[in-house]
Image (cartoon, rainbow, N blue to C red; front, side, top):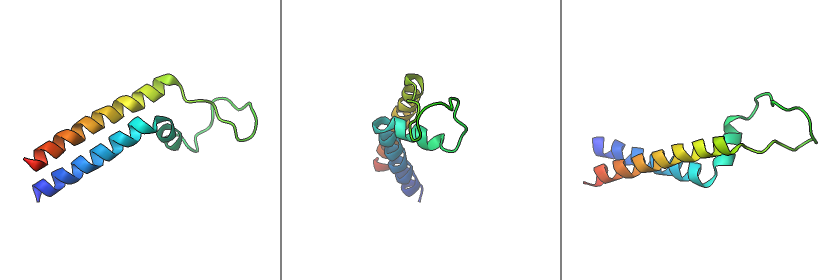
Length: 78
């Protein structure tokens, strides 16, 4: 049973890692949906671009998640 949980943790970690590395801006926009914008000017339907700092943070978390997922996968297979 422990190997199954480890394998599921590996699949989840790899999936989240790939998602964060491939689409960091989308993940950030989904996480901040519904919050009051800091800048209320502009046209309807336009959004401020995601800052490079937050994009890098999301990619860093994605890389760590992918690395841990691969580690857990290696542990589950052994």
